[in-house]
Image 1 (cartoon, rainbow, N blue to C red):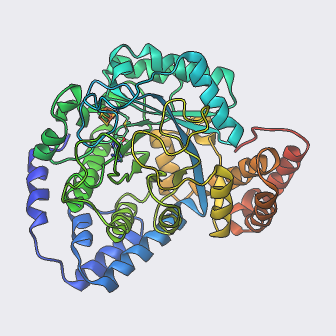
Image 2: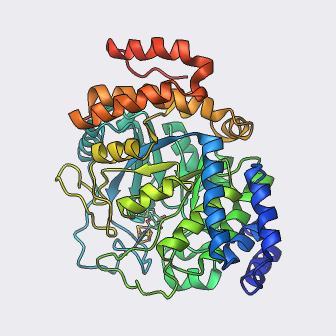
Image 3: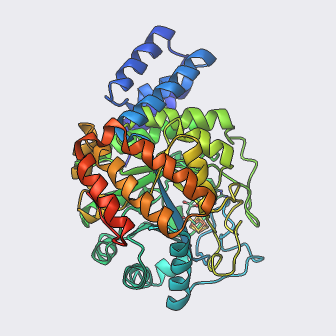
Length: 454
Ligand code: SAM
Ligand code: SF4
């Protein structure tokens, strides 16, 4: 929950003059030392109009990302369980007043079929997503979905993006083995929030902004925040999100595991698109960079809402996890549809193509789920990230899971490209400490062993 004093300070900061160049240089130095930034400092960086300094901000973010995470890029796919919704968020194609949308909630068999389709591409992580109707009907539907996917597929981590729950319902998700619980505040600005969310449970700003407190209380210490950029001034949103993250860390001892940076897209049947607050590509790059500098240890997620060229560029700036080969329609994978119904997707490459492009850009694709399964979540994860240790696990685990992908799922072209990438990263200093055992484990994978991790 943002305290009132901080909320006021954020509003004031929007009207302040840009800070002098020396001050920006000082903040960049602080962030390169991985000290993070306060919400007001993040606002100062976003307030600078100097294009040279903006370039420095972007470059600094790339350095910070590499220091913490190395070159690995984690991949996942969303699985839409239902497009039935009791809310009426003006920007969303699933809103209840959109009578032109064919509504569908997947049965247990259908959702397993979807998960198997995702698995057959090579994914190991799924993000479950749904409208508010099935959640209102009881959390058992989502709980069964999580359990069913773990039981009937080789998917190794199920994350969830659904409406905020009570502490008791969060406990049920925890027991079912949820990975990260994600919820986006959409906009932190109270009046704008009321405008975009006119009715239903989502109209309650306070219920939404306190969701992570209930999730943590229920034992879910991997939580993912986000803002829907385009609903209000992006500088306000970044400051508010950084402030919210700091308050959660201070009060509950654990900061966000991830931050998502979705941008408002045209949705078929939505009620608004021209909000006057849409952000352009340059502003999205700066937003991502400042979030990376402010929250150096937090994963940043970019979805297929954005076009391939921009997603590739954002990897250099701070993004560490991306979805690929996605459908946003319930049943979309089984029906062979891409480009779904919730909003327009702009990256329609297959997972194989995305993997190949990640390799070409000099990064290492990762299907790792080790931290979650080794119970390196919440503070345990952050403690490793803060001393620069996490990449010593990320990189070897990325190499192991990428080898599996190349053997089991990759096209010939991706296989050739991938082998070169594996060789290069195997020689890198990041894996020096475990190289011998890593070579042995990679050989085990060649002989058919799977699911090996550090
Ligand atoms: N129904 C749940 C909720 O609203 O929290 C979770 C699922 S909702 C499908 C996931 C996210 O999609 C929302 O939090 C919102 O940020 C995003 N979204 C909705 N409409 C969008 C649009 N037109 N463009 C981009 N993202 C959108
Ligand atoms: Fe429903 Fe979520 Fe879409 Fe709002 S954003 S209409 S709650 S699915």
